[in-house]
Image (cartoon, rainbow over the protein chains, first blue to last red):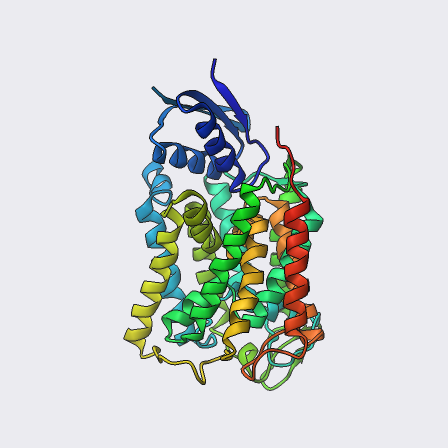
Length: 72
Length: 364
């Protein structure tokens, strides 16, 4: 069961802050981040990769992007 | 096409965009814009407030086509790449107040972060204090972020909401075309123009507009942001946006050298004063306000172009802030700070602290 971070409607830099907080909290495993702008999608992906996490998938559901990142 | 879409999201992409902004800005100076002010978002929005008669400082009145181009260029890019998304409702009144005080702080220094970079690239060492202030203000902003500061979520809304600021800018352009400058006259029907001073110095309208459109388009693609450059470094140790900002300074400097526009020193720099403390203090206020609002003045224009109604409110706040600045004697000038600059900076900092301390919100 992956942790879910809902960052929809939040503007820069909140989606990245929430993602980083979750990364610190869980340490490893799987996190799903929900965002609704392409900018946030790019920023969250870039920040996660910089933290040594892997971008598993990015799915577009209507106006929401569902970003799944993992670290084993 | 997809490669073209992607490149601007890369590090090389943002470096290229920063370089182009630096080169275009210094060329615009060559072509008529004020020295070390090729593209200054704060100064140019202040000139637009003057053109509309919201303040009556005779030397800074011109409807700057670059600003209009920024918003419309971003709008075009957002539509071309299917990123236009109308959204609004994340504490608009706070964004308005932050915009107003960001402008008040920037005008004490005499420039936004873009102009601070261009002043440095032109050899105006007073800009160093402005940039240090900017870093200080943004650093305080990151402390608030770490403490849970958050203005809340925006909502997806009617497409037409996102169109309002672009349409306003289009309206300004139409006004400019209908009531063009008459040589030697300070007014053309409803629009005010400067006959001397920085407001009288401008590149040809068409050239300014086209360069504005190009910068707006590229900046929307790359997410270029001067405040984010420093914030991301402090908050996340990320240098992505910073590489664009540094690129702007480097390429503006090289272009200045090539054009003979580099004049190093502190004294007698164009549209600048040497009061180091208030160059610093003004930009602490501006930097903090930009950080709390989530973007530098340029970025707010690009966000407004891609449908962000809250960024549009910030822009309107900046224009109104410019009017207050000049009507109340808050703005600096080459002679130094204005009669009430210091009081305005202190008031602005207190307001920003109030916003930062009281607006913490659970986002879950």
